[in-house]
Image 1 (cartoon, rainbow, N blue to C red):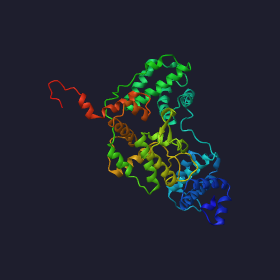
Image 2 (cartoon, helix red, strand yellow):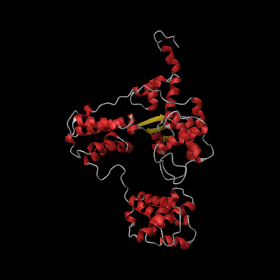
Image 3 (cartoon, rainbow, N blue to C red):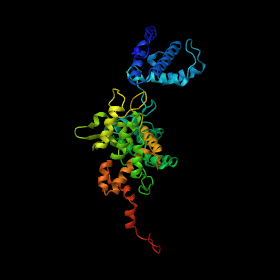
Image 4 (cartoon, rainbow, N blue to C red):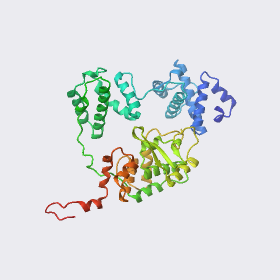
Length: 415
């Protein structure tokens, strides 16, 4: 693959002739598949040459490259005196080195570090995570968040969960929730309660302890859902460029959010194999990996076809929506989807009424359906809510209808 970026036979022989020439070939192939421009790829290959040269001087084998190696290389760069390697932007060198290690991990030449487990984690916590994945279909991000609270819970007892008692569990939840907001406190109670369910089912703690976890005070229907008016939604969609690959992609994403009420995580997990063009349906894997078939409208289908034909870089990856700039590949997290929506709102001159721009479009779908006469049951089906109680909050958005049933306050003129 070196011939894609270098024309000189001597330079190609120089790169391949070293001890790690095969690794450089693997890296060059990854750069080509990721769509890097020739000049950028050359810069990254040069950075890896520097890394390999430095590692050889330090007697560090390329088979042991990891995050610690990258940290040492970064500390070396400010005082670098490596012969033949002139002054270069340290950021470019570090990025090239990080991409190199990532490509080796993707090719199976280096082990992939676990982001969910640490060596000091109690064994019972590792078993709980496996149980949540296999029996509850919980995603890694949720397991990671749960683990933050459970590590603190297990610190005094380790693997001996038989020492748990109601008073200490309640005290842990109360102290944790006092130092954070309601959402983080709720996450803590949910994590502890799920953990106790697992321990009770496995006979590792006393039955009934899950009942001692207090529920945090929160008035679920006390606020109004934040949403956009229909004309604002149309302005946001129309703000996308019809000529750039990023604009074509963003328009397809916005239509899926604004017409089908998908979540940002749903967009992130969508694959090309989830599209059934013959039946005009989209298979969506929602929370808990529950799969649902949603209708593909003509407008949404046309936008996805335009993206696949004119906006998507041809990479060997089934993920539907990918980055529009190299390295081409899936988005890192659902936050990227919300950033796309937020940028579109700014272009359209629409103020985002709350955090989570992608979820605002989901609220807008429900609010629009309700104003057009749809029932809460219909909205619950479209939004894939497990309980109709989750959908009840949208009953408050039709202010005109609520005024008709509002009772006047005593001794006050009715509005």
